[in-house]
Image (cartoon, rainbow, N blue to C red; front, side, top):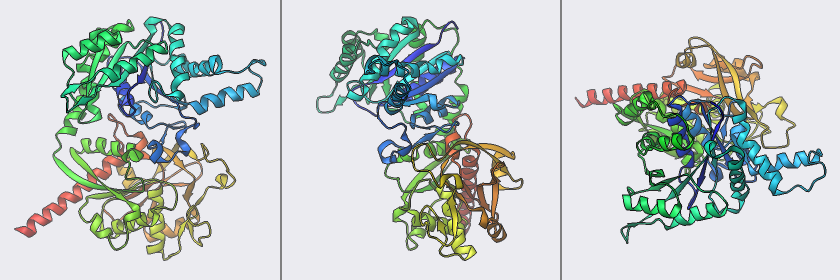
Amino acid sequence: MASVKYIFVTGGVTSSLGKGIIAASLAKLLQARGLSVTIQKFDPYINIDPGTLNPYEHGECYVTEDGAETDLDLGHYERFLNISTSQANNLTTGRIYHNVITKERRGAYLGKTVQVIPHITDEIKNGFYQLGDTGKYDVVITEIGGCVGDIESLPFIEAVRQARWDLGPNNFLVIHLTLIPYLKAAGELKTKPTQHSVKQLLEAGIQPDILVCRSEMPLPQDIRKKLALFCNVNINSVIEALDAGTIYDVPLLMRKEKLDERVLSKLKLPNKTEPDLESWKGFLGKLKNPLHEITIALVGKYTELPDAYKSIVESFIHAGAVNECSVKLKWLSSEQITSDNVAQLLGNVAGVLVAPGFGERGLEGKIQTVKFARENGLPFFGICLGMQCAVIEFARNVLGYPEANSAEMDPKTVHPVIDLMEEQKHVKDMGGTMRLGAYDCQIKKGTLAYKAYGKTKISERHRHRYEFNNQYLEAYEKAGMQASGINPENGLVEIIEIKDHPFFLGAQFHPELKSTVMTPHPLFVSFVGMSLQESLKEEKKDTQKAI
């Protein structure tokens, strides 16, 4: 291909319309036609990255292979495309300004006055083109965060305007995602918000090529004509995006609306073959026609906002489809769980996942959850802090160290079974300083982990500071908790499990970050499979009792 094609996705009227899902769906359709595609997200907030943001502010922080703390939309990109993203796929205003100020301090601008235009906009454009310049991709899709008209988005919109002149019309395309609200009292779909949104884009010097219109109701032909006329786009470039039953329906809905064909036409790309979506349709078939249903408890401290655990939720969807099983999540706040109510809360679930997190709040509820699962043979899966809670609980109730704790929660504990890594003890900055990104892990044969992965060497992504304290490892192994996964370079414990239990496994890493539609994560697949198996056993017992 002569040159890389650049697609920009902007949003108007309101946030949370699903720019990331539309971008990922279009990328999937183009990929299914044999094109090499990547997606990047430009966020207008001043944080360098989401690493220090509260999950209630921004949802989960998604970690890439190279250790970048990024926006949760990168998770959608990876899950849809089955490719890895990197630091280059997510830039914020904070990082842009940081880069420009660093260059200014080094004298890179030769004494010139540093301004938003051209210096900030040039830095943004460098980010636009960075992935395209690698030669790996035919198409680069860039999602611009926020809404058109936001003050903080102005430099990004200006950079998009300038990019058209850099790239030329056949290598540049803008998709504007907007909302067509339905007024129930009037019984009408309203186009005016979209007209105003497009007008703001036009005032910034950008004419959208395609409108993708979110709506609760189908768009009649007269509404499409009105939008085309007043927004200055072709009528076949007005794309309907109805609310979908699952985000994984969206690529097929966009295919039905011929979004990919419009893009190929405008970018002068060949349109000779149909997209190969057979494996995607196979996944959807299993997802929508499960043979079984189970309930898994998800115990965490951010349960009021499911987006805080977005990758975990999606991993259960992927693993459920493999097991032809619908996984219903029972959201439980760890702050509400006590020794008095834990049996009642977990009595009717097939398994329990204790979620990752930071800080002491809700810790004791997680430990009570682990204790109940361990003592009652309830399938248990702990991730990061969830794994550490399993280690603390075992120390207190099996090893006989009632004061055992993590040094994160109690720096003065006499039994710091979870402790700070030596290289972390003098770190002052919070952002980007944890153990981040992909690390190798050696798995012992004959373990739950080995059964799940089917191999001894794996690589998984991390985001944490505290580790299993190896001074206690011998005591744990003697008492029945096995370190089944070890980092080969430094000997750190990555996976723990208990042998005499249907499924009891904790992972220090974040397996949910590598689960995709095409490659569901083996630990989630194994956990859901065992939870289903144990659930069916219980059902059989109950049936026999009734007879």
